[in-house]
Length: 102
Image (cartoon, rainbow, N blue to C red):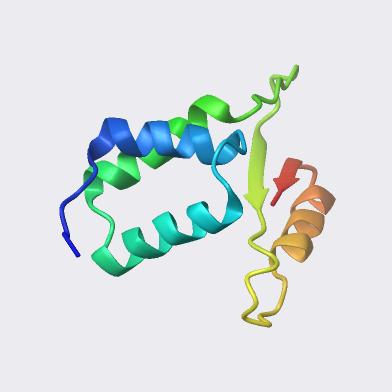
């Protein structure tokens, strides 16, 4: 198997196709497994991240108050304790505006 990188632009395009459901689950699994075995390059990670940012739905916050963003990574299968929900509740209890997702 060739261990050549796919580059930033190809990674961006691949992420768009994955997010839009244009690649079958079996093919997506094969591609992502191959990338993981090869090891992701900085350019590939940058391409994936830029595509995800472009695909994300922006949240409009109509307030001058500081707002914090807390993301949970639940469902990772590690059976770890959920800290993000408690952190969000505790932060909100102090008066901070909190946006939680994930």
